[in-house]
Length: 200
Image 1: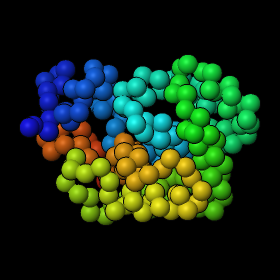
Image 2: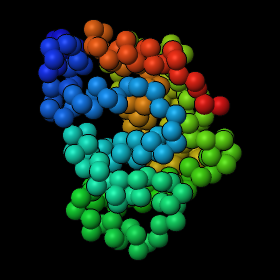
Image 3: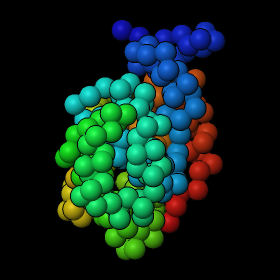
Image 4: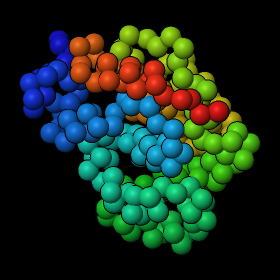
């Protein structure tokens, strides 16, 4: 089975794009390109935790509503959320109303504050787990690096950050170039990674 499919312009894209029309834009504009912004990194970790057991299409379709509900994923603001905010969010039909995952976002916002205080930034922390020798693209759902990051985050008190969730985060945020061989995004991601200044 081919690992690429023709996109709207006829050029090859990762085959997973065929699952939904909106995936092409997400793939071309975001997926797999390196990110150093703490707020975007925190957002993606949260959204990946919400995806657990669901489809990414469901989460992507609700992303703007998630952003509205969670202060654009400003972790300093979310860290101040109370039990009343949890109840408010449980009534918000625009997001996934899963109490454990909602509470995990609030918990993880507080853990992010601690991590930033100790490590300098969330970006500096996550980029320490960049794969030095990434596996062939799209062959696994975890990696040694995602297992290690997951283990450390859990040790720090984070919730809903299993190794599969963390690996999906790493794929999306450019810590590993998992665009398929032949996909037009693979070389773009490689170029961006070469010019990317890793946060320290």
